[in-house]
Image 1 (cartoon, rainbow, N blue to C red):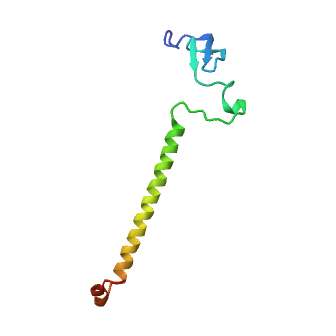
Image 2: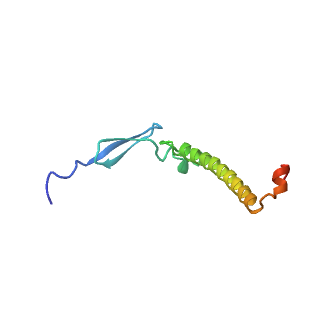
Length: 102
């Protein structure tokens, strides 16, 4: 095994959470800062809340809204296309075209 290629191991590395909780672990860094730990994570606390640090929930909701808008637009296009096809299948007679009915 080669020497001096392995990182320094800290037996008592301090981990600090955003909620204020601190504890020690063994790690390659002497101090670690985290956003969420077992004291504040919804799975361990039993709370019903979203843990969203990168805006994933908002992006998902925006995609859902965009999909609804797109679905309505597609439905309108299908309806118009169906009406056009119906008109092509049932052309007006000469009398209807001259009278302007139907």
